[in-house]
Image (tube, rainbow, N blue to C red):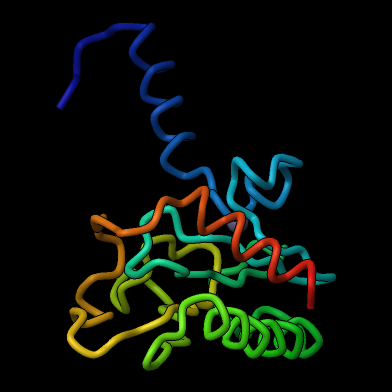
Length: 162
Ligand SMILES: [Zn+2]
């Protein structure tokens, strides 16, 4: 804990705070650099983005443009589009990865396992028999067989050809 008077330090702490509280979903939505931010598809009310720390290759997240922490804070139109995008993502992931199953779901709040709890997002990811449990692995970095740039090219292309 720092209690000494040091003017430079308050600036440092403020920057640190800004960095920690900055929302990656809002930043990605506002940025025009989709390849850098891994946004594979933009719909009217939601967008689809790759998880930078995926549980399995092809791990997508669907998030509304609105910065809200609960599903009940978005309108029905947004929820409907989100669900439609989940269905489209299911089709795309099955086409690209031929998984044995999929997880589709949301973690609301830190206690529920949300890595970024201030902005809701729906996970859609392929699953295979024998891979580890989804709930215990959210937020962890994993070694993957596929490079993210490869995943991005594959999935953004699939969304374009819907
Ligand atoms: Zn946000």
